[in-house]
Amino acid sequence: MTENMSPVWFITGCSSGFGRALAQAVLARGRRAVVTARDPATVADLVAGHDAGSARLALDVTKPAQIATAVQAAVGRFGAIDVLVNNAGYGYQASVEEGEDAAIRAMFEANFFGLAALTRAVLPGMRARRQGTIVNISSVGGLLSFPGSGYYGATKHAVEGLSDALAKEVGPLGIRVCCVEPGPFRTDFAGRSLKQTPSRFPDYEETVNVRLRKLVERSGSQAGDPVRAAEAIIAAVESGNPPRHLVLGAFGLEYVRKTLTETLRQLEVWKDTSLGADYPSAKT
Image (cartoon, rainbow, N blue to C red):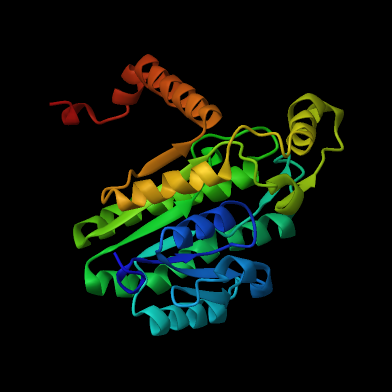
């Protein structure tokens, strides 16, 4: 496959972490890539040497005008967007009781509303061509949640809910939707993309504060490798039938399995109560 005929990837949040690793891997494989960041100077090194097969664009997903401009520029340059990777976002951690309203809303703007807006901007082209793949970088926190991460988890649960509906809407049109759910990865997430409001209350010391401190202390020593994560994402997309859920890392896989198993157990324990909520006439 020549570079001029290769799929076009549009990746957000490429200045660090998964976005940077994925952009490097996509371009290294000869695929074309639209590499975006709020400050495009931070991704200049990624596109160096890939003049014909890359575009470097400024994009803050919380700004609708920038979304429209970036999508138009990408289509103008390459003719289409084949793979959209919604990666841009960050974390905010606090106890649910002490979450700061402005910080919560700002995180939702980036992690959910920006993702939804960019998806809406790209879908018309995919729908017209009856093909495309949308990859939403979620988290194991989109399938379960942890102390201190209630609001971050809520943004990722929202992404999962949106993706469930979207997959059913666009699947018949030849468009695939995949959520990537990483566990802990060595992406400097804690150093660059995480804001915290430690609890002031002793009651939360052993649940919220302990976890918040450990996340920072362990930054740089997580088991997950962003390069291997990028390779896994590319393999899933290029399989032609990516999974709806792609959990990455042993930690994530273990916790998701445990959570789903416990959910199924509770459903069985409370099955009779669940069934008893219907009108008796419906039990046929």
